[in-house]
Image (cartoon, rainbow, N blue to C red; front, top):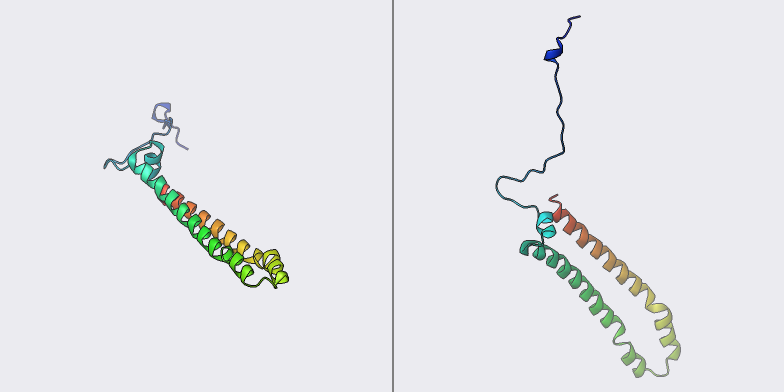
Amino acid sequence: MPHQDPTERRVVVTGPPRRTRHASGYYRPRTEIDEQTTLGHTYVRSLMRTQLRSALTVFAVLGLLVGPLPLVFAAAPEARRLEWAVLGFGLYAPLVLLARWYVRRAERNERDFVRLVEDR
C-alpha cells in the first residue's frame, strides 16, 4: 500500500452558501414581491383580482339563489310549510356546494400563484 505524502493531501474548503444572480439581470417573481417593486405589486394584484372574481361569482350565485325567495313566498302565501321546507332544508345543500366550490377555487388560485412565484 503506497504511503501518501502529507503535503499532497486534498483539502475541502467550505463556506456559507452564496446567492448567485443570473447574469442576464433576471429577477425571480419572489424577489420582485419581497422588494415591493411594481412588477411584484402586479403579481399580488393579480392574485387578489382572481380571488375577488371568485368571491363575486359566489355572491352572484347566492343572490340568484336566495334573492327571489321572498317574491316566490309572497306569490304563494298559503304555502307556509313550503317556505319552511325550502328555508330549513332546501338551501343547505346548494350553500354547502357553493362554499366547497369557493374554497377549492381559492386554494387552486393560491397554488397557481405559489407555482408562479417559485418558478416551477
